[in-house]
Amino acid sequence: MEQLKTYALMIGLTLLFIWFGGMIAGKSGMIIAFLIAAGMNFYAYYYSDQHVLKHYHAIPVDAQSAPGLYKIVQRLTQRAGLPMPALYILPEDQPNAFATGRDYEHAAVAVTEGLLNLLSEEEVEAVVAHELSHIKHYDMLIGTVAATIAGAIAMLANFGMFFGGGDRDRPNPIVMIALMIIMPMVATIIQMTVSRNREFMADEGAARMTGHPEWLQSALIKLDNYARQMTMPDADPQTAHMFIINPFTGKEFSMRELFSTHPTTEARVQKLEELKY
Image (cartoon, rainbow, N blue to C red; front, side):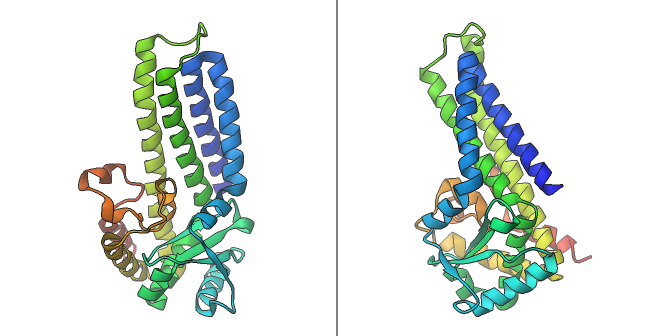
């Protein structure tokens, strides 16, 4: 069922992109948008995981090189009924973590050195459970596709400002300009909404997987505090939604929280508090 929801969202966002291409440049715009969307979805589905792991210089680890982490992940995957994902450690001081991969068999969990140095074993378990919950619900693919399509719509809007198709079915200039202003905002809001909802769901999944909501509460508070004090040098806005804590937290202004890919840590901690009763 979760896989079906993922594919439905991918198709919906792709159709939105194609429709927007048609509104800007008529039939030729629809064809170009379709080809672009097909290429992006193909790349996101098959190669986005390796791209992001390479970008963050992820180091693969196993039971011999990271026995503590491996045992935690092994225990949780057995409890969740998931196959063992590939494990990676990022050589980053900022404590953080993410999951990637298109399905259960191609999933990966990556944690930073800073996270392993900062958190207790119980807190690490809670963070890993959060990432495994993302894997269980195919959130990694959804987030990647949503971010890719949102970026593509913004790019198409900028392109449309300078190049307009000559097809007769193209809307009048006023409508087209309005669409080029509104559509990137709509796409971004969709991406933000999807990402925020999935974070809440993954938090709940982690609490139920470990049986201890307080472990994740403690971990989130620590991660948020450290993210405000240090930045991640290789952090990329296109992949910020993947992390358990936004790696740009320390750079964000309060007004920009409206457009953040993550709900506030305070809201997440409060949601977890409700699970204790």
